[in-house]
Length: 119
Ligand SMILES: [Zn+2]
Image (cartoon, rainbow, N blue to C red; front, side, top):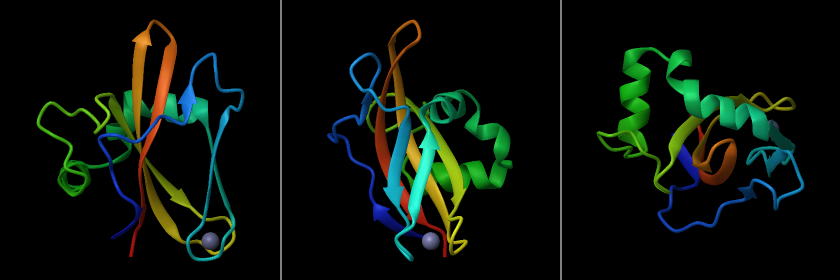
C-alpha cells in the first residue's frame, strides 16, 4: 500500500456542514488522472458502519496501517470512515480514509485523512 496523501493531525476539514456548498468529495486517480468522487452522505454513513464491510483481519490491518488508536478515533478526533474505491477508468484500487466529527446533532465536519493506493 502506498499513501498518496498521508494522515495528519492538523489538516483542515474540507467539509463543514452549513458552510460548504458542495455535497461531493473530489480528488484524482494517481494512476490515470480520472476523477474520484464520493457523496458526502456516503462518507457520513460510512463513519457509522465502515467496519461492517471488512472482516476482522482487514479491520485490524487498516487500524494498524493508519495508526487508529485503541479507542478508534480518526487523527482529527472524529470517527473514521474507510472506503474502498475503484477507479472507473483504470480500475486502480484505493482506500479513502476520512475523519467525521459531529459537533452537534446532524452537524458534520469532515477531514480527508488519507488516500492510499492498494498495491
Ligand atoms: Zn485511474
